Image 1 (tube, rainbow, N blue to C red):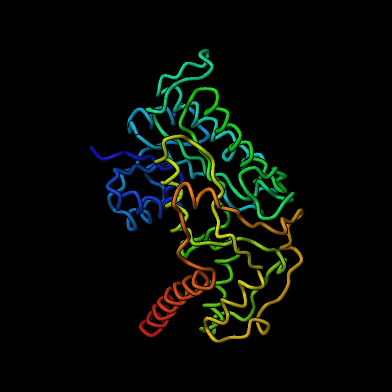
Image 2: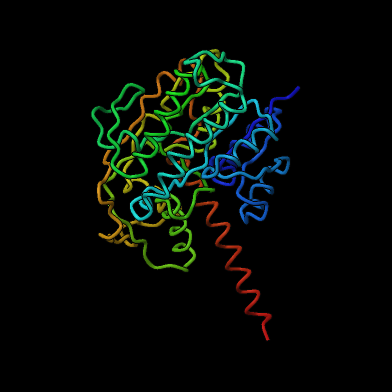
Length: 345
């Protein structure tokens, strides 16, 4: 029989790419959503029409147990999170409830449904539900070494990073305490045309498209010198899947190993439409984080050697892909608006 996977956060960027990847692998895919009337359900249904949905909420333990009982998955991918880092200073308690305690609630639900006994202090075998936790490079924060690897010390610089660090450690704790097949992927920044408009790479690609079409004059950004290891989200979901196919569970760093600044991202995006970025970009000091993470760069040697994972899209290709997608969308919206204006009474 085909394997069954349950994905939290399925309506997000990573969830949609992962659903498509697992369906192509022959999986039966379920998505956990908060209420069948979720407006983003239609979006994922268009991208992956064979996905089935089940109600559940990372802030509600009982709903997670009910969802696992109903689906009986072989694998659970916990991608559900509040993922916009700047928001974590404004709503730190909510971010902690979802990104930290939500991981604990899901692990507890898996333990309960799998029948693992807390008093046993270990064991449980490797035959039960396999669990993937979406950890983050933001856990490294004020880095102690570059590049960052699986053994690099965490020093998170935001409530988001701190919450993700808790989720990472509690996943390891359940693996070591109850013998659960539970792993974390320490994924560095990964982007795509499906990225939310609030994230800097998508903010850039959207603005470039609008400026190219004459619909926008300026792009306002914060710290142009912040450096990240950026890759393509479609590549990174392959690593998630590979982590749950190994004989023994382990945590992995996943990234390209190449770094670029926000300034590089801006320059490449504008170059893709033959514009000079310096004519259109302005600095807004209010967009600078209270505690910035300056340099994140992955050493994904273990993922490459043990999982056989490799990225396929480089950063320039990624920025061009995003700009081209936003150009097509902005052109359609402009043409539709022109049509409405021409036919209005």
